[in-house]
Image (cartoon, rainbow, N blue to C red; front, top):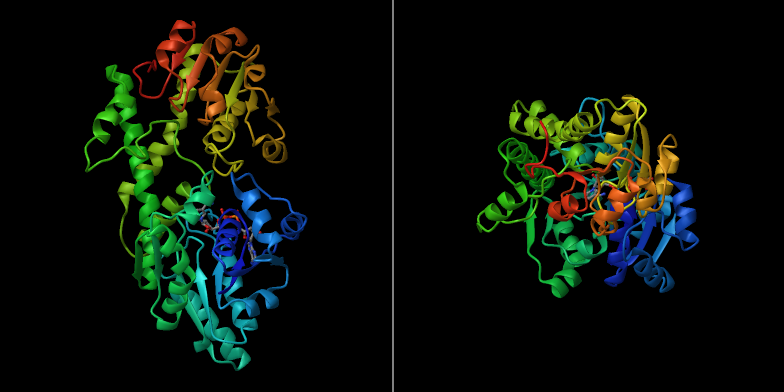
Length: 442
Ligand SMILES: NC(=O)c1ccc[n+]([C@@H]2O[C@H](COP(=O)([O-])OP(=O)(O)OC[C@H]3O[C@@H](n4cnc5c(N)ncnc54)[C@H](O)[C@@H]3O)[C@@H](O)[C@H]2O)c1
């Protein structure tokens, strides 16, 4: 099929490449001309394992091309996917102006029947708003708005494994009230469903939109739940890792998203939890459960600060090394990264902050030039008063605890991701503090 992808960021670029690899003819468009120039020169604008190889294959074959011309992009696609950002607004709701702008442009340039698909994460009833925008624009142009069919097709990929998640999803969800749109979406996904055999959930538009927010809010709830349990574990001398293991063997519970730590971050969970709370408020429901999920998540960073204060008395003039800038392993995405929230709090208390990360330091240099950046993790620990693991990169999990102890001035390690063996750390002479491992002094 002929497919257009508007917004070739973390979601759009991977989606474009995977669709092209399935045999579709794909055109990718972005308003960021620097990003397009990088792509056209054969580069990849962000770190995502497997993406450079896939992009090379589909651009070399001509299955995926890029353009900055919206008219060209709209006129190429039988199906136009909106993959632009929906960043948070101060009031908690998402900023939908980029989605609206794409709707207006598609309405302006569409010269035949097509499907406009929201892949960006949007609140329930955004589809109805998009249809309204399209109708108004088309009426103003004296053209038939019924030629543009709106659908929702939320995306569930995880950064760091985005190529695999997109090519082999757990499920495909799309919603529309238009038979034309449903048939086109079936065609788009037919080769993937044939290859992977994943379930397809066909719904109406608001249901598909809500599935995305409910999914992310539920995952965030699991994380805040286990973090709350971790805080109890610290107070009673229990180990949350074993508590989670014991819980997870129950088939009704399962093991995933039960890893205690310094809280979730990234471009999705914090924003989507806020957006879901905001939507609930707009429709007259007080989603207090999710407010508590958010509060627990934000408080989790304070747990690390409390440990550092208790170990170091005060933080003024102390050097603290943060291992991990990316919000999770496998990406250089810094959006809402817990390690960077922690870095800011430490700077506010007068500490000197060093940071190490296997791939995200160039992004840190651009966004947080005030942080000292050191590539090598042990070098970053050298002479520091304490180290904090903020991202569970394999490079940090596999560090020799004795080498960390030797490098640090004071042998204090806060393992914010529970990725180091506490016994090995203690044997190496480290004052080891995991999250919920009965080691925190509170
Ligand atoms: N990143 C994830 O893991 C993930 C997973 C699932 C869903 N989502 C959702 O997908 C959407 C996109 O997220 P992302 O992480 O890819 O964001 P991103 O910031 O990486 O990419 C968005 C892209 O859209 C472009 N853009 C913005 N306005 C535009 C316009 N008017 N015309 C053309 N291009 C425009 C930007 O330049 C950028 O390249 C968001 O709604 C997000 O919540 C993200």
